[in-house]
Length: 231
Image 1: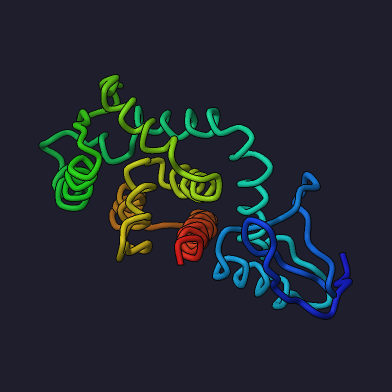
Image 2 (image 1 turned 90 degrees about the horizontal axis):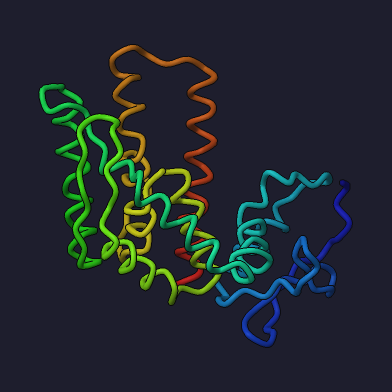
């Protein structure tokens, strides 16, 4: 699609802020008013529109797509969104380790255990660690504690958390992104520890590197979305 606007601006609206293209307010993919809670996030959305060239590139609309998802899906389907997030607790990357006699296990202990113990302390829960691939369910008490934590989040936070959690395959890492001073790149590297370990041992190829780079960009953009939301 060719660029159809010249001026991009941000205006206050009931409930927050919205982007205007040549004075006309943007709507979501489902046709709802695209109003976001923070001015910083609205400025980020506006920048995506401003930086488009003569032909619009949908791949550059990271914040727009997350805002649309928050308004059109995460909000109206909040219980389902939370259920999807809680499902990652049962198979959280950080809980599944190699066998203790493997060198990879020591790397996992060094990187993952501090993240997991900090998460448990913040959320006042205990999670099962597993060596190997056999599934071990988490306690109902831990799941319900996390359900309560997620239930008070707004739809924009849930949209961002769902993205980083799905990319990391870890709700622990997803929620860690919300912490003050969180290092999104370090959290992404932790989530990809096993893949990076395999690259160290056996090398990589162009297609794998390309996929990893795209997923990393999506993760970091979602983390930035959450940071702008809280700004």
